[in-house]
Image (cartoon, rainbow, N blue to C red; front, side, top):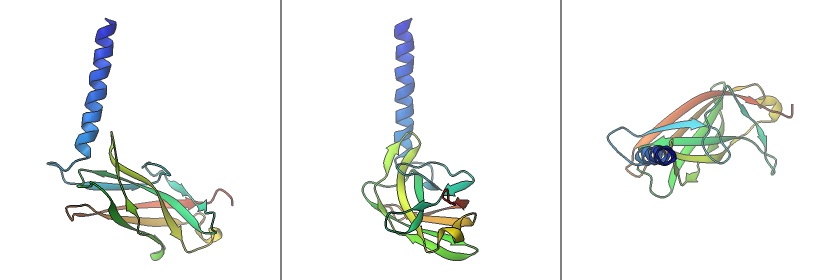
Length: 153
């Protein structure tokens, strides 16, 4: 009986890894990208995102991306922008190497640096757009609206 439970758990774990591997390769389904937050890996946005006071005097939010079915062996480039009230207030052009997880291809720790002071950002709704081009030349776009919160104010 214990062997059967162990075998079932091992089979389930193998299926989850295989599913993640399938999400990490181009396939029959179209590629997609989702934008969120995350210092190390992608995490879905909630209603708010924390404003980080950077060590060099800038102010940023941490962005993470989750891709599925991307052609992504090696470094990929992306362009991110953040607008407030329809005016661009932040941009980033990171290079990234996506990590394969059970959810797909993830990358975190993108600094989207805003050109405003914390008092001007706290409580503001920002519209964030990320455009990622995979190795097949497919440009994918993800968007999110989230409120910036400064924990120090």
